[in-house]
Structure formats: C-alpha cells, structure tokens
Amino acid sequence: MAEKMTRGEVQDLLAKFAVENPKYRDALIKNPKSIIEKQLNTSLGSVNVKAIVETADTAYVVVPHVAGEGELSDSDLEKVAGGKQDINARCTVMGAGIGNTVTQINL
Image 1 (cartoon, rainbow, N blue to C red):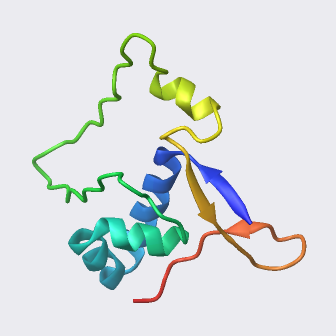
Image 2: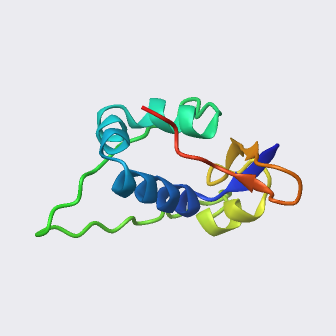
C-alpha cells in the first residue's frame, strides 16, 4: 500500500534510522539515493539526492525553492497529488489494525 510522505517526514525517518544503526548511516552517506529508493521501495527518478553530515560547528538550513511565475510553491506542491515534495512509499502492512509502517532495511 502506498503512503504519501513529505520530504520533511522522509528526512525525519531517515535521520532516526541513521542514528539507530551505524551500518545504515554509513550506507546512507555513501549512496543516499539508492538507500532511500530501497528503503521506501520506490524510484526517485531524476531527483538528485545528497547526504550532508552535520558537524558540531556547522548548522544547515534548507531554504525552500521560491516559485516563479506560473509555478506552485513548495507548500502548494505539498497539497497536490504528484507534487515534487511527495514521495510515495510502498509501506509494509504489519498486520490487521496496525497500519502502514516503513521499517529500517537490513544492511
């Protein structure tokens, strides 16, 4: 079953897995696009994926794209099906009544 996740939700999920599992973290740093596609059982197509490792003396801020004339803003894209901000994760159903989950892949 597919579940829509925003980029922020995917980011939070991947960060959680990276903190919990050093092998996953290393693989995510080495080849983030492949790991995310495998993790979410989906293709990201032509989307570029970069892993940036935080350091204690550097803070990173993700600045949203400013929509040009005739373009939807990132927040508007979040509201429409098929927007660039949505990632379709084909989640595993863990059992009746439990719902969809994305589980950490074994590396």
